[in-house]
Amino acid sequence: MQYTFSSYIEKPQRVDIYLSALFWDFSRSYIQKLIDRGFVTVNTKKIRKNLKINPRDEFMLEVLIESSEVLAEDILIDVIYEDDSILIINKESWMNTHPVPGIEGKSGTLVNAILYHCREKLPTINGVERPGIVHRLDKETSGCIMIAKDDSMMKHLSTVIKNREVEKYYIAIVAGIVRDRNITIQSLIWRHQTDRTRMTTNNPLNPKTALTHAGIIDYVDDKYTILRVKLETGRTHQIRVHLASIGHPIIGDSVYGNKDINTQVKRDYWLRRQALHAYELELELYGKKKKFVAELKDDMKKIVKDM
Figure 1 (tube, one colour):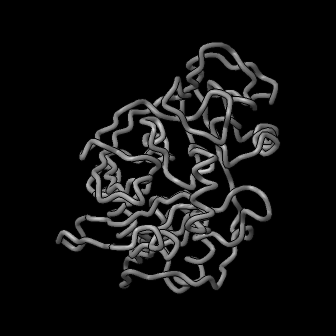
Figure 2 (cartoon, rainbow, N blue to C red; figure 1 turned 90 degrees about the vertical axis):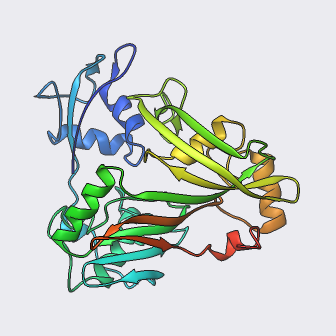
Figure 3 (cartoon, rainbow, N blue to C red; figure 1 turned 90 degrees about the horizontal axis):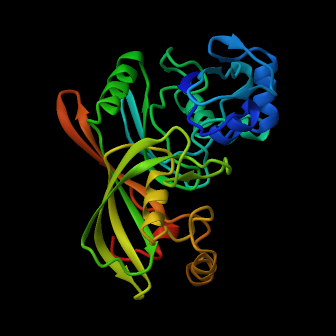
């Protein structure tokens, strides 16, 4: 996989520190190895890991995962729909979508499961690392994910996602009582300046516009609000960051949520992850508008009793 981008910083800083903040899946030592092996260039030149970069420097970073590093695994998946060209699943909340650097990061992912499930038919584009997976969900987020099983479907799904022709709806349970029946949140969002595990709306690195809509479904115990959320853009952690930015973080969210509320939710409902579920996808498929719905997982069903 190859990334090209410009640095968005206010003052010079070490390149390895900057990149490890920008790509939180990659440790600083892994970034340094990429630099040492010549897989990172700045302004078209190979660099050293202690280079001080400047605003608007041009980057090219290449990440290589050898085919032998990612193996097929017989992992049970919840299939919503499948034919010869496409597979749509209801992802479990404990599963990473893609492998990440490190030995443990190469196992138990959706990619490992798809390599096994679709072992007789996979698209040739995008290599072994992302076999037909054109979008992703956070590890703790459950719900709908589409997987292409041939090159033609891979191209189609990539195109409709790029053109924002896929409507994505989520169910989120948030802290507090939301009063406005319909909410629209628009902001710049991307990596936090110093904490590489977080996204932020406050002076982000390489900011990108993000747009989220939400409507109220119901309330729970006069403490929490169930929202139906629609994404207009697909930024990393977008829903979690946006809802936290208006004072209603998703319950169970260990990064953007409220620690005391999360402790109470764990005690009352045994919820051990963020209460976010990719509930519905709508897109054109085979010339017709199709809708796919992923049933809530049991841990969220305990809270959202009537869905």
